[in-house]
Amino acid sequence: MQLLCTLTSPFARKVRMFALAKGVSDRIELVPSNPLDDPDALLRINPLSKVPALVLDDGMGLYDSRVICEYLDTLMDAPVLIPRQSDQYWNLMRHQALADGLMDAAVNIVFERRRPAHEQSPSWMLRWEDKVRRALQALDAEQATLSLQRLDGIAAAAALAYLDFRLPDLDWAGHCPLLTQWWKQAAQARCVIETAPA
Image 1: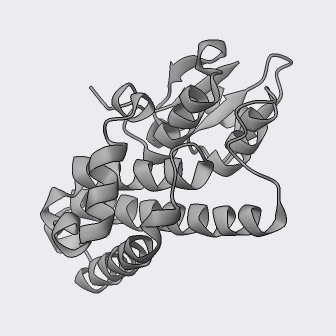
Image 2: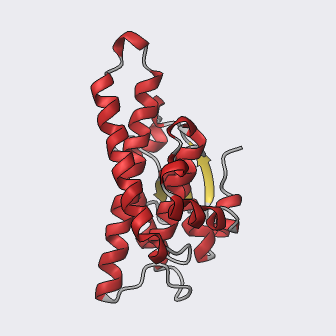
């Protein structure tokens, strides 16, 4: 399998962390792909030109980190990173959606900041920062249920790592004491350390 990605994408990192935790990372070849260039190889797999995109051995392409993680979890019986019991599953999916939304808002802030100053929208920046803040508050309140042995914890870790990497000025840790403690431990996990952008 090939994973088309940028090493700085939080969504690609989520998939890479998931693959390590699942024990299937050795079956995946990382293929650097800049979605901003609309490369042909990526467009053949994902017409949206977004990473990550996974090319299966039969040539079929899967895209969106949620779909790719669901697929990777089917490759081996254990460990199960996406429990299917109803109550666990829906809580896990809810946490994943929250972490993914946090990453979406953070990526939007990063790209907006890269625009010329006179083209930036202060109102949109504030809106995205509010989304980040609210998502962090919700994760802080529920951090005790997050685990790097499941998809929800992996998604949360990818989001927090991205904030530290691209938006340290937001000082999220100063406002989320419980989540900060969780992150200090999670940041020591192999799947987090080995996927850090160089």
